Amino acid sequence: LRTFQPFPWFEGKIRVVPHGIGGISPTTAAAKAEARGRLEWSPNDFIIIYVGRLRDVKGCDVLIDAFASCAPNHPHARVVVVGTGLEEEPLRTRVRSLDIAARVHFVGYQRELSDYYDACDLFVLPSRKEAFGYVLLEAMAREKPVIASRTGGIPEVVGADGALLVPPDDPGALAEAIDSVIRDEPLRVRLEKAGGERVRTVFPESRMYDRTEEVFREAVTVRRGSGHRQGGGDAVSQTDNPGKVATP
Image 1 (cartoon, rainbow, N blue to C red):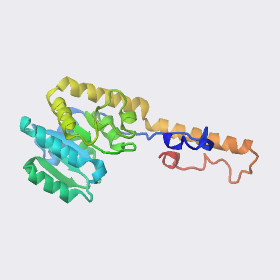
Image 2 (image 1 turned 135 degrees about the vertical axis):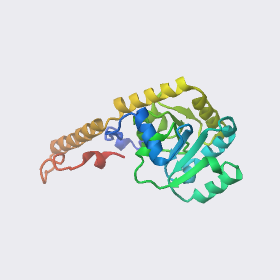
Image 3 (image 1 turned 180 degrees about the vertical axis):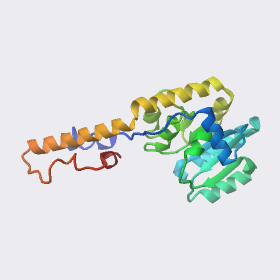
Image 4 (image 1 turned 90 degrees about the vertical axis):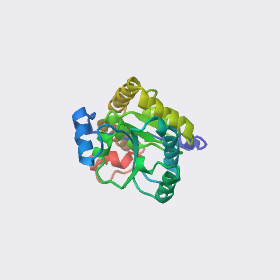
C-alpha cells in the first residue's frame, strides 16, 4: 500500500485480500517417516529444505554459504534444494568449491511437494526480496520450523513468532539461526506451533474467499450507487473462483 501513497486518488479505493491456504494438516511423526521412506532419506539426518526458483533474488547462495559455515558442527545435517533456474549451475559450482557437495542435494523441479515438506526438519527462505512467499504458508501449515529473511512481505506473513527472521544477504546471521534451530528442540517446537497457529488463524483459505466476495459486493454496490448500468447480473455470483481473481 505504501507504493500508492503518492497518488491521493487511490485513497479509500484499495482493498487487500491476502493469500489463503487450506487442505494441509500438521505433519505427524508417522507421515514424516513415511515421506522419508519414499524419498529414501535417512531417518537420522536433519534435513533443511529450500523450495523455489533458483534466481539471485531468492538468495539460495546465502543458504549454501551459511550451511558451509555451520555444517562442521552438525555432521548429520543436509540441505535439499527443490527447484530449478538460471542460478542452478553456479550454485552447484559453489557447493563443490565449499566441499559440501555430499551434503547439499539438488532435486530439480518437483510437481508434488508434500513429501519434501513432510520429510524435512527445517524450512529456509533466504530471499533478498520477497513480496509474499507462499511457500512459507505451505511449510507453516505443516508445522515446520521456519527461518526466513526480514524483507518485503515476509515479516507480515510469519508474524511476531511464526519464524526466525534474519537480515537478507547475511550468511553469518543465517548460519547462527540454523545452528540455534538444530541445537534447540524447545525452540523448534515453539516455531512449529506458532507458525501453524498463525496460518490457521490469519491465512485460512475460507477467509480469502469470503474477503474476495466482500470486495466484489462492495464494488457492485458502489457502481450501482453511482448510477452506472449493470450488464450481466451479479458479478459475484458469476465468478467461478473469486479467490484467484482478486488475490495478488
